[in-house]
Amino acid sequence: MQKIANDNEDFDVTVHWVPGHANIHGNEEADKQAKKAAEGCQNNSPRTRLPHYLRLGSLPLSISALKQAHHQSTHARWSRIWSKSPRYARTHSIDPNILKHSFIKLTQSFPKRLTGLLMCLRTHHAPLNLHLNRIGKSLTASCPHCPRTEENVHHYLLTCPQYRQERHTLVRALGRKATSIPYLLTHSEATPHLVQYINATGRMKTTFGEITMLPKRAD
Ligand SMILES: [Zn+2]
Image 1 (tube, protein in one colour):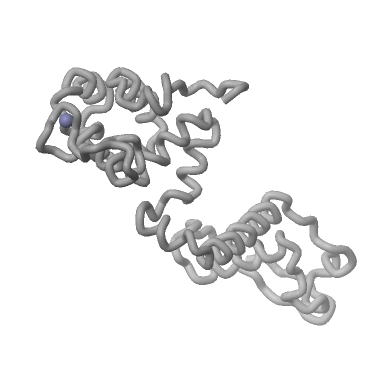
Image 2 (cartoon, rainbow, N blue to C red):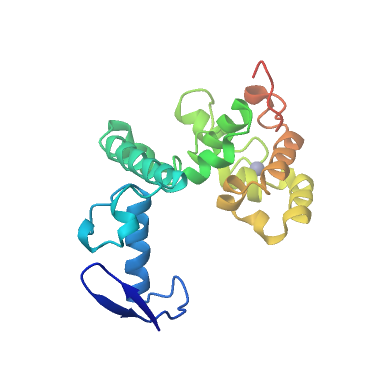
């Protein structure tokens, strides 16, 4: 127990260790107030109740807390504006995660062509016959190798027997996760193997050429 001197009175403080982030009310409240103070909201305690050395100047601000607060408010503002955009409903119905930070983070170092290809696969607008037929660029929606089956993203990536060998290589590298389209299209460790699969099948070559993961100056 420690005695703290105040100008007006003395009071006792007992210091206990408590685990952090364990939903202990007092600790959570202290975290909240510390964060507020680090962001510059220091007026939540009357100055007369602060220890003497804190009454004169201001507390040093935390740059990382300020950055985090700025990032959160910018993101909240962007989300509000985006949710009112006419394109929001359509994009959201196709892929609710398309503009999530995780996708942006995944693709930020990729060449534009690879990002474009991933976007096409995620929105089901890849140059496969089902989509090409919808937009009048193919007479048929069927797979060129399987006349009775629509050529969609699922068929191209997971089931078309024409690409059995290429898929075998993909499964050997990624195991059972290679059968998950969300995994293939959203995880960075899957991307090089997916690129290898796509290049080996040659199916996207007409539209996207040879896909590479290295950014090019002219790309
Ligand atoms: Zn097929």
